[in-house]
Image 1 (cartoon, one colour):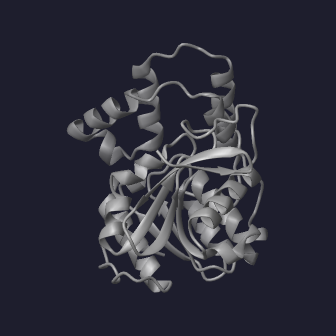
Image 2 (cartoon, one colour):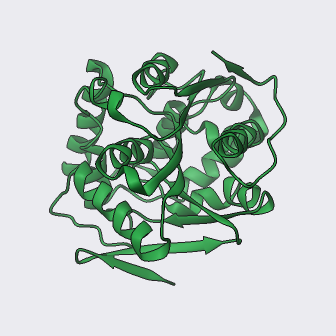
Length: 283
């Protein structure tokens, strides 16, 4: 199991395939292995090298239970890239991971060749900020929530009605989500980053080619936030994926992968341009 130490913090990472590098950055509380189901195989088949890692807060990377900020996660990603690839590299991020990629594009533009930003935003809203802080407070109170309850609530938050109403699909999802234990201190530190400041003016300074993907049924980051993020970044593209919630990259992987590969190719990638799809609307 390979690790890289960046500023004293150990980060677990994996490399798959050969070709131009793409770094995949996961959301809060999510292991880098989530990318292995769908995105890594698609990238490898298209001729890229895919890097995944567990960010600080996610074991077996260091949890850093004392807490940390988004700048720490940005520095971790920059250090990882510098250790593993000469840069600049392509990046794909979702949710908190997209936030980290956005900030990296500002802080270290020489490391970012292009970026795909999924389920992300450029400014906060009252309801989602309150939800993030409520989840942190719930974790700090250390209640013994049953696994069935945790899995059901997470499914209803993160998945689309199309998945929730599919008896076979939701059975599989609930079984998967029940495997996850209660959030540890590192995950709660990640959740505490969710009430982000308003970064719309700052993102006007992003120079790397970016493409934003929003999910039509995303309760955590509604599509209007993705649209506002794309409007904030000069020249950014935008796609809206139907029948997908916050976990849209796992619910609709074929659609999402086609968009990712199309952007990578259009931003000077080595892969063939992916075919267009009717399951996503370009706005």
